[in-house]
Structures are given as structure tokens and as C-alpha cells.
Length: 322
Ligand code: MLT
Ligand code: MN
Ligand code: ZN
Image 1 (cartoon, rainbow, N blue to C red):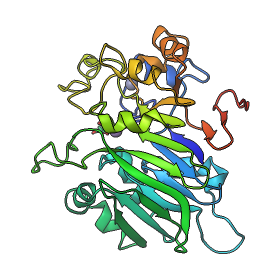
Image 2 (image 1 turned 90 degrees about the vertical axis):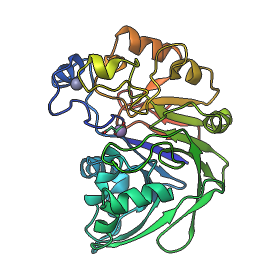
Image 3 (image 1 turned 120 degrees about the vertical axis):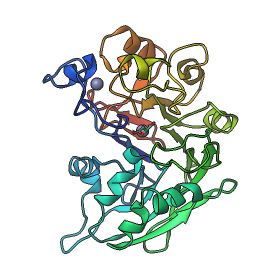
């Protein structure tokens, strides 16, 4: 399985349009200590020809433009190697890119039924996009793996299992009760031919047992790295809620994700969905060093892994190693 990080930042990106925090200011300098990043999305493929997007950010157009693998193939007419889009939740930063991909072609959208409902009734992206192009919506079961299909109807060689990671409700959903199953999930993706596995969990309200058991045998884990500390959103003027109240276990602290991720045996471990206020974005800073010294990558746009071949290419290093 091939894994391409398209966007490694949380909603807002790095730098964010209205933010003058240390990181955003540094990211505005050419070759500064904070590398600019687009919003949260990853592409996966069994064989490198057809790709599935895990979440679709508003930056998807820019992300496609810098990745040749996502360019239309063939020499005539329209087409796309994108065979489907999988949504971990109904957040604006993970779904609004579907509006950018409205100009025809055919691909499927996969989500839980609750996310499908919110994207039909509350943020009606689902209803809107189907008036532009063929978008079959496939609801992911909580118990059974779902095989990802190519538009031709042939199996892609990949299957997805949803991982319950707790409950978080998008801010625009004002009438529903929090705490419903399927509001935010992680994905366990399995390559059926090679057996390689990826855990993708860019939003983690809880380090749940289902996440832990999937992570135990995974070849790669891409985990929620939104905030360094629980009070970061309040301290940085984002709003009144803590990181945990916003549905993100922070990186640092005794029950943070760093201890947990450092103890996993997966060959590749990266933080993704990193908010622009997170100090671990600052290259050479103490937080960045603590993460790197734990064998964990602070993901950058353009990072790529081939889980079957066990090779990795990191965006700034551009060198393969086993
Ligand atoms: C989140 O990751 O918690 C959301 O994307 C935040 C938001 O954009 O409202
Ligand atoms: Mn987000
Ligand atoms: Zn900022």
C-alpha cells in the first residue's frame, strides 16, 4: 500500500489567514523554522494507479496540482485516478473539498451513516455534489470491514474498518445530542494482497481500545497531533474550549498521545492534523525534538510511504531508506 500525505495541518492550515502566532509568522518567512502546510488529507493506493482520499480538504485543488499521481491519466477528455473519498467525520476542514471536486467524473464517498446524515441535512455537501456528478455514497458499517471499489466495479485491493475513537460533534450541528456512535472514527486500512495496514486517525477524542488494538499490529499510524497541550486553544485565543473539549487528545501530558504513540511498534508513526498553534511545528524547538527523539515524525505535506516495500520519503529529505 502506498500512502501519500497531501495535507498535514488542522483546519486553517499553516499559516492560517487570520493568525499571527509565532508559528504562523515563522511559516510566512521563506525557508523559516516552520514549514507551511495545507489542511488535513492523505491519499492511499494499493498499486499506485487508483487513489482514495482520506478526507477532502478545501486545499484539495492545490494538493492535486502538486502530486502528479493525482493528475488525470490518458491523453483525451476528462478523467481522474481518484476512485473514492473516505471521511472520518463531518468537519468542514475534512469535507468541504468535495465541493471543489464537483466537475464530473465518478467516484464514491464513504462515511458512517451519522456523518452522511449531517452532510445531507446540516452541511448539505452530500446533496449538493450529487447534483453535479455521480457520487455514490457508501455507509461504513461499525462492525464489518468495507472493501473499497474502483469506479469500474472491480475491487481496489483495499478494505477499511472504522475505529470508534469517541464522540465529537461538529460545531455547526446545533440540534443533535453529542455522544453518538459514528460521529468521528479512525480508519484501519488493509491491503488485501500484501497484508500491510495503516491506521489513520486525524481526530482522536479518546485513545480508545479499538484504536489501540488496531494500532498494535499496524505498519503505519498517522495520528491526531492537533494540540500540544490541553489549554493551548484557550491560551492561544482560539476559543473557550480545551483541546479535549474540542475532540482532540493533546500530545503532551501523562495521558497525552506522545507516550502512547512512542510505545507503538509500527514502522511509521506520524502526527497529522497539526494545528498552527502547536509548538512541535517549530523545527529545532524542544517540543519538535521530543517528538523526533521518540521516533515519531511531525508530518509534512509530501511525506510518502510504501508500506509493502517498507520505504519512506520525507518531504524535506527526499531520500529513500529501508
Ligand atoms: C476540529 O478538528 O476540531 C475541527 O475541524 C475544528 C473546526 O474547524 O471547527
Ligand atoms: Mn479539524
Ligand atoms: Zn497561528
